[in-house]
Length: 171
Image (cartoon, rainbow, N blue to C red; front, side, top):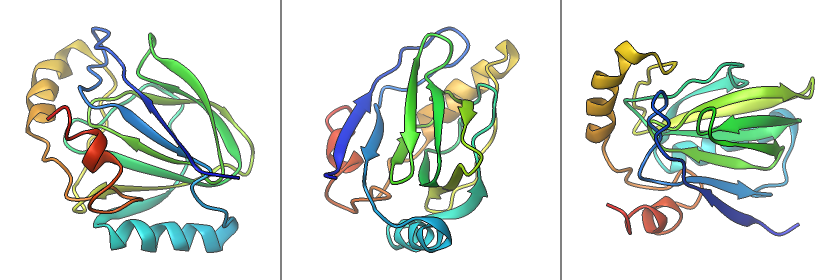
């Protein structure tokens, strides 16, 4: 299957700030599966300076990160993710998909296959926080999101494509 690039822009819903940058999904970006795919994703993300990686799934509650962007590489199974908060969009993601989530964009796992596996990473190995859209988080979250650096590279396509072109139109 051929890779397809999808973008989604979510508005602030009062609890989840979302972002001026669109979330990017690279559908069918890679064909490897299993442990080999997990290792390949980690190395590929690292080659584009997206590190501080982890392996797991996606939390089953709305959350977002205010101090970093995030990439998720799905290397096994599938899930329905609720992206952008309660007024966002429900999307099916599957093995082979890569999701670039801008700081502030809500994400939640609504249900997944038993074999659903994800690699997550952050630009320049940045740390991350986990915010749930509580009113008392918002003021600091907005300040944090405004100060998140623009990534030097796209986690999948590198220095001259992907978010580097899609997001720089908005900067």
